[in-house]
Image (tube, rainbow, N blue to C red; front, side, top):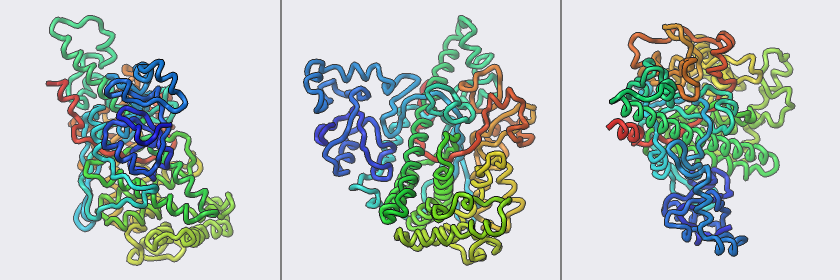
Length: 575
């Protein structure tokens, strides 16, 4: 343990607080600035756990205090923390940086993520414009982004934190990042391999901002000595790949850990609903404020679709609905009060199911009338539970109306659109989409493209038209996670979408000549003669292609701030 007065830049500390109770991206991280020390002190704790082996002194080993249990050892070997850090995985290298800062995490084995980028629109005017930044986020830019995005610290729970109302800044996206698995490129998440790090010859060259050598990066590395005058381009391409891979791993690991902490917070809130409902409310509101504080920043926002990591599907569904609903609210410029109500209501929208038997917690077509009636009772039970928790009227309205439909075909009150609240309209739409993509039985899952197509074609009258149009624009015609066949017959996975070009997303192409963990994203908006021919189900893919692309079984949605200096490292290398 270390006293709060002994905190120093370079120390890897553990806050031992819920993610919603502090302003940092993670609960365990390396201190990178004096400002962070002041924020930590403002939390009100007197002592913190810290890990000497993961710490890195900034001004020599004497800047890091010894733990109370190891004064003799520290005195005998004052340079030990520095030596340990030098051999630690958390020390930055050209291909990996520390997992300790709020903006950077331990480099891990790649797996694919998907990113969509949006910009806010007025619901009465137009759907959101979107831009995708193809350049990788360098480690330094990641750290700068997280430092500037950190919100002011608050005592104890994040209920003390505020959120300025009004229309948020524009949202833009960055490159894709891999999974933090330490053993297999795809084993941890089951998702597609990362894009943005390697190159598959000329087809993927544009995504890297340059032309890779013949045979792609792998071929360039194995081709032997370069011809006279060709060494510099090859070295530049390799450097770009290293920067891109490092940035992807950092971003993915950070995002995955944030999702894990948010799920843990939701699980704790759900566990306390019956025994201590007031505390459950505090956690739900604190988690929502933490999401908003990390989302509603004066920066571009990158929206990610991650692969499932075996999480509890109930917690995963609640967080999916909350995150995507808040992103939609950001697009429409909802005021702070509505955003908080929508977030809490989305997190708790199915809380009434906890009082139902397991067989009645899912809407199954095979259920009889009596079981269907029992299932529908979860809405009223949820509202009653929300009142015991002391939730606001806005949050209760979201819980009460998350199954209502614009054409009065919903339940339990059969409301028409004009009688539904704005936040409830969004939650009802996102709830339906996520259930189509992530049903109880995986065999019944629709692809993201199928789910969006079904909602748009068959359920258009059931949802607010302006919100449905904005949702389609935000997710794209071929939403992230869709498996497609291109017009040149190659197979690919959609990994990011530019809503200004919904038919021209960025894709990870199956290329046997390039390992999936080294493959670059291909930007179809830069390929004038290449497009998407059709969307496919994963089972329609040849076995080798399915193994390469590793389509997601379930999807997890999250987000992260994007540094303004996104492509700085690549531009420096190109200079």
